[in-house]
Each structure stands twice: as C-alpha cells, then as structure tokens.
Length: 420
Image 1: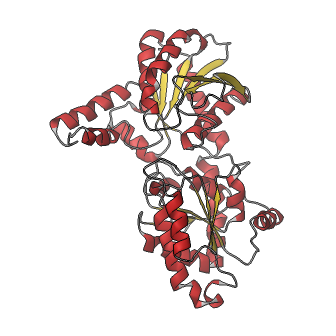
Image 2 (image 1 turned 60 degrees about the horizontal axis):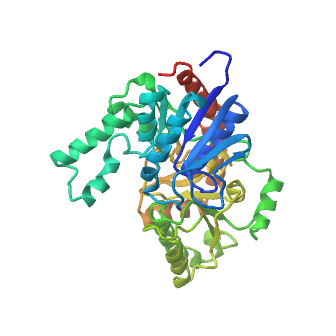
Image 3 (image 1 turned 90 degrees about the horizontal axis):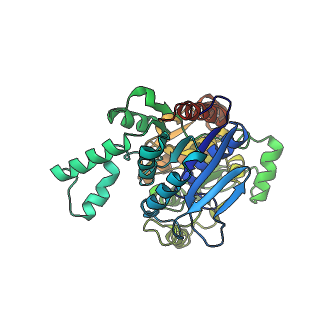
C-alpha cells in the first residue's frame, strides 16, 4: 500500500444493519469509526436478508454491499455466504488492502481462500469462545453421530484449528479468547486484545435531572428501585432463571411489606426482542410465566429499544444472568452509565465485573443466587451507591470506544501496509 494512500478495509460480516445483535453492532461501530476518524475507505460486505434492502448503499459514509441469496438471519447463513463472499473478494481485489472478519465462523474461510490469490491480509475477530479450538464443531459432530472424543472428532477439531489459525491477526474481545488463541499456537505478535468497545459519550451517568426525566418516561418515581435486563429473550441469556429469581423475591420479600424494601415494590424492566422460530426463544413463555405467577405488576416487557442507554441511566441495577458470554457488552454499557451489575460469573464478564466493587457475581443458571444478590442490592441503597461510584472507571480504563478502536485501526493499518 503506498504510504500516502488511505487505508482500504473490507469488513466481512454475515449479517449487518438492520439485523440487530452484538456482532452487527461491533461491525457497525468499527466501520463508522474507520470511515469517520481512522481516515479509511471502508466497505461492509454482508449477506442479503430482504428484497426491500438495496444491494449497495452508503450509510454514514460507509459503503455497504449485500451479496448472496436472500434469507432471514439463521445459523447456516455464515456457511452459505462463503461462495458469494469469495467471488466478491476475488473480483474486487484492487479495491481493498485488508479484510477484517467479524465473527469469522464459516465466512472467515472466504477471506483465507481469497488471500491465496489476492495476497490481502485477513484479521479475524471471534465473538464467542470455542471457534479457534474447534469446540464449536462438537454440535455438528454429534449430529453426524461422531463423538468429539473419538479419533475422528479430535481430528476435525485439529483441522478447524489449523485452518482458522492461518489468519494474519486475531482481535480478541476477552481474555478467555486470547488464551484460546495462544493455546492454538498462534504467535503472540499476531494476537491483539481488542474488546468490543463502549461509546462512553452515549453511555454515561445521567445528571440527576436527566435521571428523573428518564424514570418519569418509564412511569417510575424516585422511590422505586428499577432493575434492568437488556438482551434477547433467549434461553442462554438466563431470562428463565431471572424471572424465577424475581418470583422468589416477590414471594419471600415483597410480601413482607414496605419496611423490607422501601415504600414501593421494585420494578424489573425486560428490554429485548423475541427470537421467533429459534429453539431458544423464550419471549412467549416468559410473558406467560409472569402472568401465571401474578408478578406482572412488578415486571414490564418493553420490547427492543433503540436507546438502551436511557434504560440503564434510569435503572438502579442492571442484571446480566447469562449462561455464557464471550464478553458481555450489555454489562459494560450499564457500568458506563454508572449502574452496578449483577452478573453470572462466566466468560468475559469475569474480565471486568469485580464482586462487591462495581457489581455482584453469582453462579450461572442459579435462580437462588440471582435472587440473593438482587435482594441485597435492592435493600441496600448505600451499597448501590458505592458500587455505582466505581462502575464508570472500569469502562474508561480499558473499554472506551476511542481507546479500543484507535488500537484496532493501527492493527489494520499495519496489516494493510504489508499486504501478504
């Protein structure tokens, strides 16, 4: 790449806006930053999902190109997109210097195959553990009747590792993924800790006036503790355990009267989309559970929100009871708003949730533990304030958007300057 030219980046991601999710959000923020601040010509290469969307458009200065067959988001999309992505990368080789693949399962293969011809370097970012180690292949193996522990199963895992490990660089969103990458034998100079960042201008502690206004918008006064859950209404997000914990709290604590919890019964606000057609969808079942157990006066489903920051700014506590999390961006966003978090002690959440410092940890899939930690914070105003006072600093030190994306840009620029 000539020294005086702008960096040209293709961000390869199976799905993109208007599809909403952690992967899509990460790709979107990286693309916008590169285009706006990083002085890079940026193209997002993604799958067609709807005939209502154009095959190519500009979104805030970012070129978005949609390829492949139309089809809604589903797990097979990342594999079915490989041929179309490979054809595009080969045909447009003179238009980019480096490929950044966000969630490289499946589609990352297109980047590696294209590199054989184009010599354009490829960066991989996993959004979950188990990709590079091949552990994520176990489900497919079991469907084929192959036990992962057999010779064939171990051989498949090893093949997956050898294939993906050929990427030129790895952006690791959590220390678990960083360790997995190291264990796969990737040289240290190709491994970079680059977590999914938080926009700390958008996600920030509110002024007292802003807080009261936001709470009023939710119909909540200052005398009621608000607990916020934001995420897909999906089994792996721990929603079932959270609602069971809330039922237990209502039964054991709130019936004890105002002296136990203050003047008003706490409110749990559940924000996020249903997952219709997905095996892990809990939307309908969750609302039925709330109605069946008579806790609908203290649980409110508000659907997906365009402005999640406002929910965390209005809340007193955030809860992230996930069964697993590679990172746990929603917990970081809550902390950035100064909201303490009750979280499962899993995955990337352990990188930044410090028990009794900025939040509270509990075992995953454990309703009793969730109820215990939520109950303690609901009752203890002073403890909430103490944890809140440390929440923001956690994000600013390591996870702020300006800090992370500036480092990400430098990694891409270094790759693009040498073009393997």
